[in-house]
Image (cartoon, rainbow, N blue to C red; front, side, top):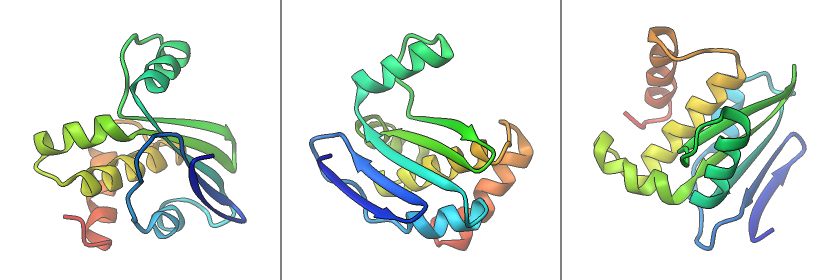
Length: 133
């Protein structure tokens, strides 16, 4: 573990060489998922992201975010931190804003939402609630 934080039901691991954003991850989690939901957030790079994406989604490219439910009340989110920082400008966001968006996106997938207008509405609602829009 390079850098990390942990609470009873939430842990963060940074498997990259840089630091990770100081964002209200616990508050995001608690706003989107039940409080007793056990969650791991892992910051990864392109190689690990590509490997996970190839193995679990059969896509041979690095993803910016991957969310894996482990049960009804547990899951993991992997954010490709270097890719997020590269893609942020394309979405007119700072790197930290885009990481916040990706984390919320992953949370909503764990909640059972799929891509579409309902998910986009929930993303906007949460980003606005935390001052990221």
